[in-house]
Structures are given as C-alpha cells and as structure tokens.
Image (cartoon, rainbow, N blue to C red; front, side, top):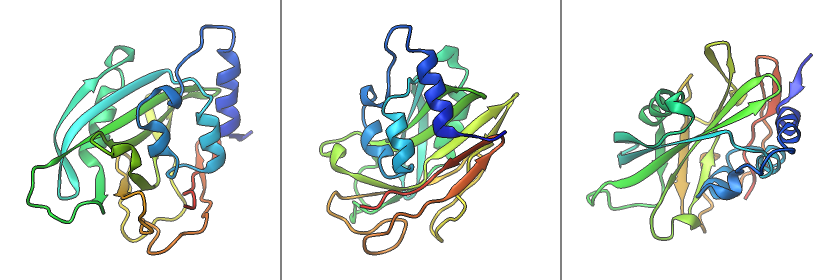
Length: 213
C-alpha cells in the first residue's frame, strides 16, 4: 500500500519524539530559504519539523553552469553518503541569473545533502546555495533532487514535467538562482502559478512542486 512521503516523515518525527530534540532545516544554514521554492508547500511544512539524521556539504566553484574543484567540507554518518553528495555536486547544473559579468572570480557554491529516516527506510534531499554577502536574499527555483533508498540502490523521486532548461538524471538536477526581486525562474518569465507535479518513488507517493512567488 502506497504511503505519502509527508506521512512517512511524520512517522519518523513521532518515533523520535521521546529522545532529545533533533535538528530540522531550521537549524541548517540556508536550508529554509533554498528549499522554500523547490519542494511543494505541504512537504516544506513537514520538513520544518522533521528531524534530519545526517547532513553532508560539498563546496565547489561555479564555472559557467557547473561546479569545479568540488570537495566535501562536512561529513556525517561515518561518510556513508559522501560519494552520493559528490556525485550530485559534480552533476549539478546551476543557472545563474544574478551575475551579468562573467569575467570575475568564480563564485563559491555549496551543495547540501540531507538524510532522513522514514517508515520505509531512508530518504535523501539535495539542494544548492551560495554563501556570500546578501546570499540569504537570493531566490532559487527548479526542483530539489529527492530519492529513497531501496536496498543498496537509490530510487529518484522525479517531477512529472520539466522545463526545457532543466536537466535531470539519477544523480543530476538543475537549480536557478536569481535576485530577490526577480520575476524570472525556471518556469519562464513572470509569476508562475503553483504547478503540482505528482511523483512516485517505489512505494512512496508524494508531491514535488514549485511554489508560486
């Protein structure tokens, strides 16, 4: 019987309620801002209160639309998810709407991988962000990379539709970064409407959607 991903995360939350309070995305720098528009509003509210089991961070330099010189700068859970985080960082496409002068020094970007325990096993979510002056004002669009672990394999939770600018693969996704007052995004020009994308990952059924601005 299929279970909604939100329900699975609540099961994880309730199971851990008797132990010490765990981290949520509230305690992870940039997570609240970066995830706000790249997962569905309902799922986002669940993430605000769901405990994060592990957190891995990769740093790299943005060259055109990809990262170079990627390196693990934070590793947890005995390094079990470091390879996955590096793969995602090396395959990530970033569409940078904030910079018109490309002749300057490369910008430093961070790719975060969050690990959650759910009823059926393990779930992972990845997002990217810039850590710089005014970085918390940047807006991100696209669809976060999400997957559940089935045995020793990751099963991606994919949006039903992609825009022409988005690249997607088992360990690949696209995010756009734009100024706070920008009306442009991976959904095209102007203010996009809420587009719910039903997705299925193994036995988990969830909504992976962009949030309207």
